[in-house]
Image 1 (cartoon, rainbow, N blue to C red):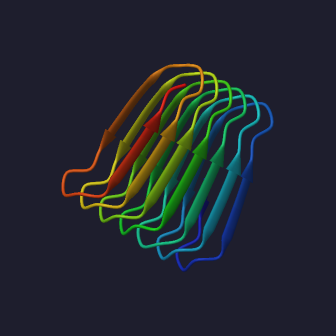
Image 2 (cartoon, rainbow, N blue to C red; image 1 turned 135 degrees about the vertical axis):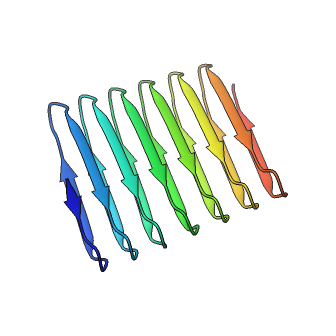
Length: 135
């Protein structure tokens, strides 16, 4: 559990799995790596950049309450949930399948790519651009 109330940079590494919880209430950069799976939860209530990498699967939950950029990568599958309530850019990539749920209630850009199949759900209630690719 990493808590940085006034910003800064949080680096969390769990090489063999486990649970990573990172909270940056006023912004900053959060980078978390879980090479063999596990659960990653990121909360950035005001702004900043969230980068999540789970090479062998697992669950990634990223929440950016005021916007900014969320990038989630799950190379071998798993579940990716990204929520950007006031806009921003969400990029989710799941090369071998899995489930992607992206919600941008007030607009913004959602890009979801699932090269080998899977389920992509993108919701942009008040406008914006949604690009979903399932080759």
